Length: 248
Image (cartoon, rainbow, N blue to C red; front, side, top):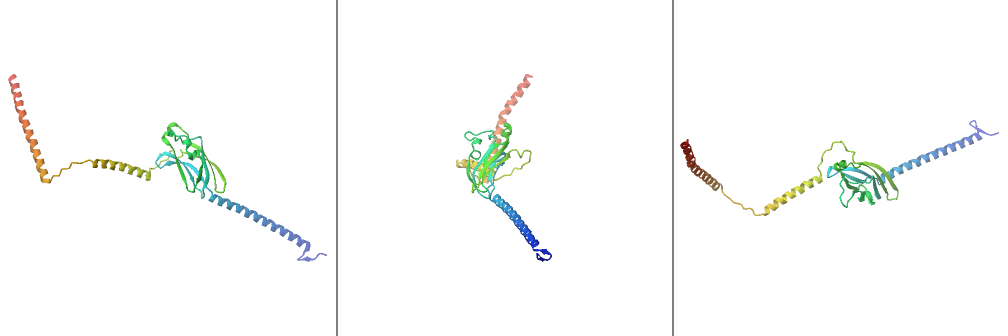
């Protein structure tokens, strides 16, 4: 006869122990799966926080809001290697410069060996009024390819639009470029003044009493010449009137 403990037979206790072991195993397995998933999430978070992150967009030029620059930045925490940026359709300026076509600019046609964190590369893209006039494309698909220092590759596609600010009001903020431009203008004017100052200048000094006497003498001389002129004209006028009376 099987002994019983608390009304449960030995076989029952063995079955309960087996069930408890299975439950413990399930809980441990579940905890292990949860821990692994949490580890992977933390790892992805660390990777995202430490990865390079290359972005590209259009921004108003620092030289003026009617000029548009294409800007590529690394906003990540680590360097990006073998950076390539390609635009579709192939870009072109409304007014291309000889030997410097936009499509052959290295930033959008070549490979950059490395971009450090917080590094920014800026390329003059086009003047907005010229682009509107020629009805050239304003939106491009940008494909950005690079890798991190461990060899993990990134291939990301985004849309960049240089016309996103149409219709918005903008204020003009004068910065270092405008200050430098104003200083160059002042420098040119000072240079012109300096050239004039290098030429000999005749200067006459005169005290106040001599000046007053000279001015008074010149005034008297002008009045004397005026009286002489009047005296010369009076006989002619009188003779003209007498001739007129005689003929009448």
